Length: 84
Image (cartoon, rainbow, N blue to C red):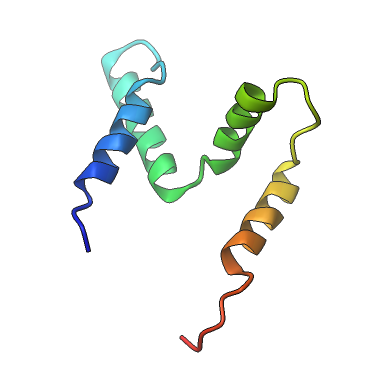
């Protein structure tokens, strides 16, 4: 398995581009929270909406949060054929 550092660096750069609230403690806490959400995939729906706005413009309606969750679960788990 390769080093995790390229992934960590890419994640940090993606988070660092987002604006943080003013004030050092608030900004640090906000950055930490955004990093935690990005690392766990909790911000996937927000990233999907940003992608939809950027690449699809006004074409179509984005999926609802529940529909997105179902589609992601289907994408992850359909086709898994193993015992453990």
